[in-house]
Length: 442
Image (cartoon, rainbow, N blue to C red):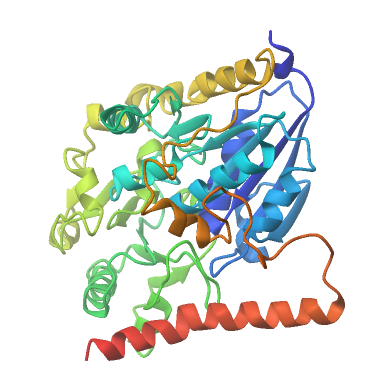
């Protein structure tokens, strides 16, 4: 057994939103051997979607330390902390910036194994997002389907594809569906940005309320991602909480928050447009419907579910239809991988290969080579510098003059000013900017 499988491990996770913290923290747990003593330090990248204490608590992962940082502050911290594994749970541009910043900070010295990946279904910007993640030691693919696509993209541009490692979504789990809830419970998993306009969101809400009226014997729940004032990975310009105001709601309809796994414990039918919650439900063998009411379109993400057997409309659901998933499709998505008869099946071993790769990298004689992203000032001179500049880094990955640094702790007055400025920034991004955009459409 490699020494890294039993020794104490220090793991860091850098995340920029609630869902990516959930993915990063749970992935970190699954990537470390059960026999190892693990210290987990969390870093939250400062921005519009920095998660709240409630959102962090909902994940259920307790970090040994947790602090909010700028990108430059994080890079400074990484030169002083001897970590074994670093998980970058960021949007693609953030991953690329940190890879170049870390390459400049670490040089050819000792460094941790760097891991990145995706929070859920990859249905848009496949090449763009993948190439921005290239350079990490492990680029995690949540299914066999994704692993094949990822390797194809890397090989197609002449980039090293050996980093692609098949795993599964780290938050799948829970007891297999046994049926028989009283009352029968229908859950609609809302998404912050799908669909992205008032007409379509109002339509879905009206159909959900209509389903509750047609089936008074059922409990109909609208599962929301965030409470008013909280923000998620995607900007939610038209929250359902606002759309539902003033409507005459039936007694069996209500809004719910909280951990998706706990909501699924009482779910008999999960309905969504394209939420990753569909994969969580399918993993537990809960009947799952992916709506076709607004079309099957790439912009909605429900095109990912073609061939799944789960596509259905509210008309069909109102009439009592319960979709039956296609077993081969489900298996290729890395959910319920052992088949219907074995529940979670091989999910328990889904991270074994990744753990083995990390152990070998940690035990590599002479340490790890410098990070080597595909994008450089030679391969993408008109693209990369702009990505780095957004994180206050120069083309060489070195912090630009005047970039926020962590050379000294801010005093009480500076902390108050920083919090006020941050609040104003988030208000501008999430409240004022959407209004201006809507005015521009008039």
